[in-house]
Structures are given as C-alpha cells and as structure tokens.
Amino acid sequence: MAVPLSNSLLPLKLDIFRSQKCFSLPLSGQSSQTRSRKPTLPCVFLRASESLSTTIANDLKVHEHEEQEQEYDELSRTTKQPERKLSDIWPELHGEADWVGLLDPMDPLLRAELIRYGEMAQACYDAFDFDPFSKYCGSCRFMRRRFFESLDMTNHGYEVSRYLYATANINLPNFFKQSRWPKVWSNKANWIGYVAVSNDETSKSLGRRDITIAWRGTVTRLEWIADLMDFLKPINGNSIPCPDPTVKVESGFLDLYTDKDENCRFCKFSAREQILTEVKRLIEMYGNEELSITITGHSLGSALAMLSAYDIVETGLNVLPDSRALPVCVFSFSGPRVGNVRFKDRMETLGVKVLRVVNVHDVVTKSPGFLFNEQVPAALMKMAEGLVPWCYSHVGVELVLDHKNSPFLKPTGDPTCAHNLEALLHLLDGYHGKGHRFFLASKRDPALVNKASDFLKDHYLVPPYWRQDENKGMIRSHDGRWMQPERPKLDDHPADMHHYLKQLGLTSDHYH
Image 1 (cartoon, helix red, strand yellow):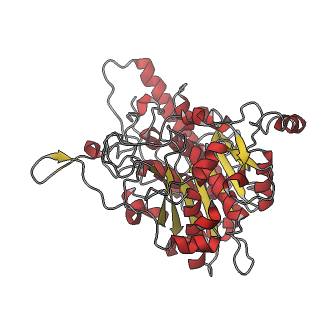
Image 2: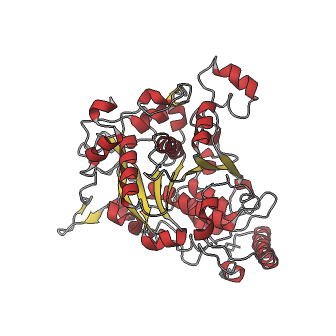
Image 3: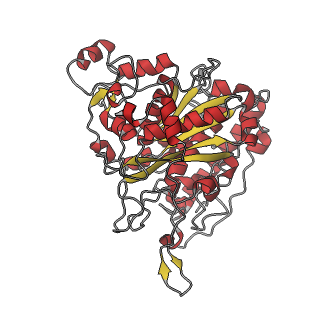
C-alpha cells in the first residue's frame, strides 16, 4: 500500500521549502489530545503489478505506526505534568545546568527549541544559491529584510539584522561555490550566514530578547573534510585573544573565521569582525532588556559557531556595563571537532554552553582527530599532544540520535544521508529518550527529509531531492524571452562598521 505523508504534497515552487506544521509544538504547552491528533491517511489504489506480500507488509507498518501513536497518547494522558512556559524556564533550556535531566527522557520544550534553532541553520541552505549556472552563485537568494518571509518562516518571529560573508581565498573548495559565468556578483566572496534578533512578540514568548547567529555549512557533499589541513594552531595566532598559547583549533576553521580580502566589497571585513561589531551593536540597542546570545550551525557551520561563541565570551563582549554576563549558548548540529582539549577546557572555564546533536552514523562528527580524541585515555592524550599535531576533543554535552530508529527512513550506505540536517531534525522530533519508541511529537513533516536527499522509504511517494527553483530561476521577459532576472542590490556592510571596530580595538592599525 502506498502511504502518502501529507495531503498537501508537493507543488515545486520557489517558496515552498518548509512544512506549515514544522513548528506545531507551541512554546507555552498544549494539551496532549490536541498535539497527538493524527490526520487520516488517504487510501491509494495499488498498481496491478504490486505483490500481495508488499501490500500486507506496508499495511502492517501503517497499523504499527497507529498503535505507537495510541500508546503515546495513553502515555501522555497518564504522565501529564503541569503546564510550563518557555518564558519561565528558558535559562534551563539554554544550558544553565548543562541540560541535566532534560535529554533522557527528552524534554518536549527543549525538543521544540532544538528544532527551531535547527531550522534557522537549515534556512542557510534553503536560501543559499549554489547553482553554478547562476550569476549570483555563492550569494543569498533573498533580500535581508524579507529573508524569513521568503522562506515561509515568519512564524519563527525573528528579523535578520545582518548578512555574513567570507573570503573564498581559503583552501576549502567544497565549501565555497562560484558561478561558471564571467559576469558574477563577486568572484571572491561567499554568503555564510546571518545574524537575527527576536521581534517583540517572540521575545515575550521566549522570556528574553534573543540574538541568534546562524552559520551555513556544506550544501550536500562531504569532501570538505578532506580539504582540512588537520593541523592545530594557537587560536591567538590569528589575533583572537587568549591568555593560554596552548589553546589550539583546526587551522582551516580559524582562517575561514578570521581572513579577509580588503579588495572585495563583501569580504573586506572578516567574518569575525562582522560578528563582533553586529553583536555589540545589538547589545547596545537592547541593553536594558533581558538578553541571550544563541549560535547555531550545521556541519562546518557548527565549527564556526564554536569559534564565534568562544570569541564573544573571551573578548568580554557579552559582559554589560553593570557587570552582568549575557548567557552564550551553541546548538550544534552534526559538527566536527574544532580544537584540542585545551580549547575544550577554556570554553568550559568561560561558561560557554554547548549542546551537540549528532547522528551516531555520521562520519563528520568523528573528524578530525579520528585517532586521538576525547575517547582516548587522558594519559595517552597528554603524551600524544607533545608528539602529533592532530589531537582533538569535542566540546559540551552530546545528544546522540540513530537514524535506524526511524521507521520512515530506509537503510542506506550514503554518508550524506547520515549527515543531512533535515534528517537530523526528523530524528529529533521522534526522539523521546533511550529505549523509547520513535514517534513524531510535533508531527513535523517527514517529506522534508527528502528535500535534498534520498532517505525516505519509497512507499511514501516523496521524490528525492524535490526542492528546486521553478524553471531554475528563469523568468520570461516582456518580449517573451527567457532570462535570469536581476536581483536587488546585495547588502554588504553597514556604514557604522568602523565605529564599532574602533570601539572593539579592531581598527586596521590594531588588527594586522
């Protein structure tokens, strides 16, 4: 029996990237009866050639899912707890106590928060122009002021305050994308993320004004792992302050974060300078409110999230004039190791909270430092640190998921599936704790898994890699000819950059 996932699949339009139900778990709680209501699955006629055994097997799967939902409904009714509001417990969800007691069993509000920040990282992929036949390849496809509206994500309640760029001169060819055409928007820069701030209504629900930094990772391929030099260098070697010269991070990540090209309009300031100045500006703007800084990223974007979180706290940017320290948290998705054990220790000393969500089958989370890492006995690691330059350690708390637990996903040996962010968010929605059955708590649409992969079982009738631009972005002109449209002028950097650079001590004289 063919089992469609949704009654609304799938018009392939430019702005249909995301399920309308992807954030159906409310911030302030909801009755279990409403949350677990399931739409009736429509019946689809079988092809004459389909075998009876296949029909029975698929019917059994449907019944099994229905039984799981009934079991979950009963569990929700018998274990119903007092309603909690995100605005009351946000410090706990932001890692104040290192998420003790929230991961097993999985706290429903934390799950919703992780999915929300994961979707903000996913937005970097959905908005990125990676088509080599586009003259805007390597840029963001949408205007900053309409970013979330263009992605049908206005329900998240954030406004993008700044786009982030990096120089493509770094030796990471599988991360940077460039157009094949001679006339392009930039031949030296790539868009790598954004800074956003919660609006008034969302801030009220969250219990604070939230500054979020979202970093883009790799689009689909994993070859960027081979691009890494796998060489640790002192973090203070690239002008990032650190009192301990033994704190080291992977050199490629560090260069990507700190390098710039003064001859390029978009990357004449480093990603580091862009981040620090924008965070300072927003803190000054909302300094009289309750504030938090949340940084998210997937894949290589997770490494940039770690570096920027460290940088913000090490420079003291999160400390207000009244000596209050703003909480800084990283929600990392499928991230690699970033630095050595000294970097891990320094992050913990500074109070940076990190929650890493990983798929146990993902090779990226096991790199770099495949041989010498946090799982090696401490004595051996200490000995190896003096002999080899590739001893790495993960940072923070780890939430391990397993795609083999999802009844929606098919067995595959494709490593990109295990690394896929939409698949990881699907696993989050179905995770309730170790040993618990897989069940989609917020009914997040599983069709999103196949947006840029071939991971769903075929009988759900969702085509692989279904997300695409209508007519590959081509439009018809007034004279009937097909052409690539011009886009509005791309944002580069605000006029007050030098003002904030000077306040931070990062002016040219000081920074080289």
